[in-house]
Length: 226
Image (cartoon, rainbow, N blue to C red):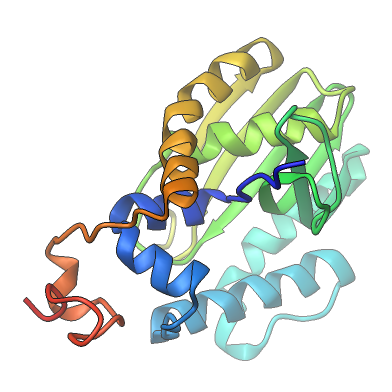
């Protein structure tokens, strides 16, 4: 049986940004993506909020500004909501749940917080960068949540923008009858990735990112630094 190409939303975006960089960092692994100050901070914030919401551990002093967000989430337990943090979801190509490292895994995703009550799930995604709404990511997360929670009829998805105080969340409400349409939206994008892997064709895609933000290096790509 042919092993499917396992992807995630971030991996798909990386491939579309530059197939060559994707190949060198994700497949051949000749190049390692560097950790920037922004990504390190984002990882630290996510971990601290995971421990605060999931286990009640206090936030470190440098993150006290996020305490109101954590309190608002934890308070949902009083209304009977089930709270899950850092939930790993994986589906096979038939859109059925599978294990994270299963041989048939096709797509993976992780939710920061999932609040479930009745037939509704509220899925929260912490964002530590500048607000950049992305409906496609919200819709993919919803489709995967429906697959893992068959008793859910509605998903309320939200990006929580932590960098700017009082920035309103980006929210989208998605119902189960939209799932087929969501997978149709992703189909051509995933097929391009699968074709590239099958044919081993990963051409460079020069952009403004080549000058300062590409770790590949001039020896592996002539566009790096341009």
